[in-house]
Image (tube, rainbow, N blue to C red):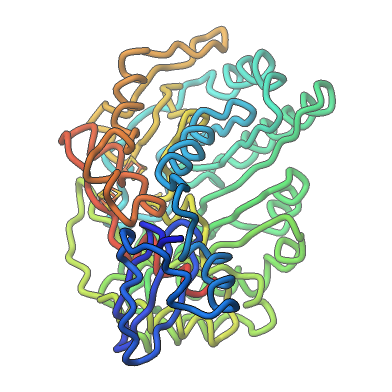
Length: 421
Ligand code: SF4
Ligand code: SF4
Ligand code: SF4
């Protein structure tokens, strides 16, 4: 037997850990341990351990059979998932309008994009022709602020429910919202339409949040969002199929600030809340250097865990900026464009087609192929040799597509939260 090629020795907070990026298992090394867990050429490693240790190391993926091809198995699983055509996710983005005015909003430059008058009618035609071909359809509500158009979204969800009854496919929804427009009726409707994930973002502590995530009229939103989380989401929390993500954007915040924020949420609700800690992304219109370090991030995670929150170990979210589209995921923009990534729309690399008046997807095959080539990290020598491949899968596809090279997603973003699994 030998060590997995995906064992990584990490020094965090003066402690040494071995982390396996395939199994996501973590092992803390005793002081003085001299075994080189990263040496995948070492033979007969089972002799270094007693039987019980060996079994546990094997079960957790640190030790593997000599002839097991980890890379090939990874590539198989990745591509099987990439080309899986049994599920469809449409990220509906009918508007880039929002009632907030966050300075880093990547959609701000697109605010003036007009919503096609036929947006939802065309979408229904597409749904009628195509949804029956899938085992599962997810309509993800995105924006701008999706709740500005909730009645249209709700109508689309009702129509999907009807088709689902007629043709026997499953459907679900999910929503990324700033949270300010959530009402009990909306929560009921989200539950009715099988909402799997709801995400609300806070920017660090009250002070930093109210500076950046404020309403268009400059009014602060922190207290209002805390109130909504504490008072309006109880039914949603109790729905066992639904997950609630509290995304906390770091922008040079202290552990104390974060703790104060987390303490504001009722103790009994925390067990339902998955905390996802990220940095504020720089966008076309916003550039700020976040100085929070990996040791601090560990402290943030420790604090959230000690207060009773769950920590995000969503493999899809952890990969990059949580919206990367594989084969079966498409954004539908206000003009009925089909995009794989809308984070920088001035770069049209992510635009692969549109939906026409008849509800047919017209795909630009050349663009689609270019996007797939940029996504295919198994074609990249550095990625193929990288121990973080199973967490990062080649990083931002748009970056590779535009600049021809990979942007490695940092370890703390892709991997650290698995330490709390
Ligand atoms: S809440 Fe979201 S969509 Fe609205 S301005 Fe802020 S980042 Fe943009
Ligand atoms: S392609 Fe890059 S910018 Fe676009 S969603 Fe993926 S990680 Fe984000
Ligand atoms: S992009 Fe960088 S970190 Fe990600 S798999 Fe490739 S080499 Fe590794």
